[in-house]
Length: 308
Image 1 (cartoon, one colour):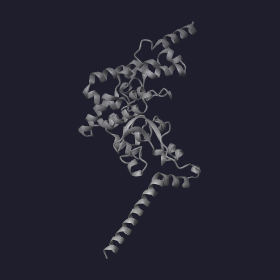
Image 2 (cartoon, rainbow, N blue to C red):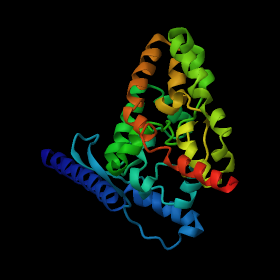
Image 3 (tube, rainbow, N blue to C red):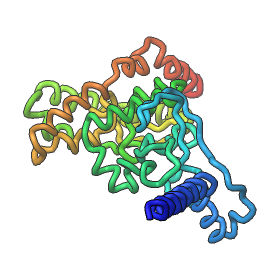
Image 4 (cartoon, rainbow, N blue to C red):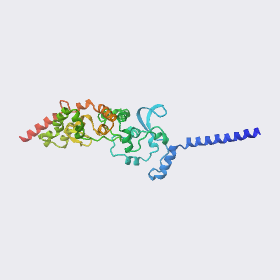
């Protein structure tokens, strides 16, 4: 009898071992990412003929991953999200943070190294609303900006001066002087009054100058950089005329949100923390340099010569 019991146990354990081995082999040679790619390729005619392969973006810098192993940063999101045309359509046009340089997780969160959906999507912001809701704290923004610099050190100066990226990787919005003055006129009225009477109106004075009136579009753009707020040199547009608060402190979309009176006291502290890191004293040197107006002197001479 004991012999038969042992035999039954042996057979049972053998089947269990065989079953476990079968599951292991299936998962090993038919992992989740391959199943996902097959489904995508079958359903999308444009993807027909694509090879099943792990796709990844190699990023700069080192990272500590969920398994507590340190190593090069990689994003393997493209392994499952293989329809690049669809991804392009889902993102805003001219996104200033290209995924081939910064990857996906810098904005969306998650674990870029993982190849299974559950660990890959852990702590992930799936869409714009989730990113805005989850990232509205100074600590989260500061962490994001630091990661951007690590991932693309060649752009460190631009990233520092434009701690200007919002939770979705787009540029923050400029809220305008009115939003800033509403609160700061109570805490620092002298400063607000002085700037309101001078710097805020600098563009009004320039528009009356003969060299500006007679200058072509290229000439006028040279004035925009220092006498407007939020000037985009790549597009030739600005957010507002005059040197406003955000000319030096950067766009105030996130800061204003955190500093709203209806928010909790802790959020006010977060806003103050954000203000300290957003301001960059080096930005002053872009305009306050001795030779900034040499082009004006030359243009004025040309105007006088033409009058004579």
